[in-house]
Length: 216
Image (cartoon, rainbow, N blue to C red; front, side):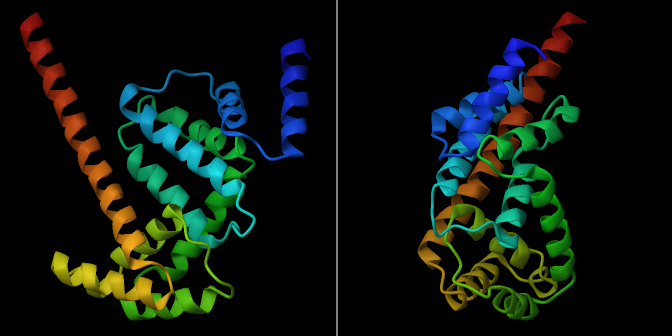
């Protein structure tokens, strides 16, 4: 075992015994993920890393099924088109472990829980959300986005227009005793990020095509 590996193991063990600072998490992350992150995705990864670190410091926070769904699904959505794709599993594992979360467990809980909500109406989804929330939900961006993602996939919302969807979503947040204002803000920023990522990827592809044509 190399001296570098021993140093990393000691550092990791030490940090598991105490609260990690953002700087600690970033150091651990880059040790575990020694690749250059494309500029388009760097901000997304940095924001997620900081968010996970901060959540890990909250005494009232618990890693429930909504956190797992929110984290896995927003990660998948915001890293669409990432190259090389084969690095994505390690990227997610590194993000989680650098703030003392277990990626495998989070993925398993997310997949299992999403199956329970599949092919249900918004009313049935609300009923299940209430049934499964046996304690007060800790409000966070990740949790809000998990609720939003689950409701957005409701069978009866597919035929609704945007304003009707937003009204149903707001009503459900209210019934879950979660701030509708905070939820609307989180959802709005999330949708904007997806839109900006899509536009940026289209622009990059357009420039790549132009450069290719010039070289021919």
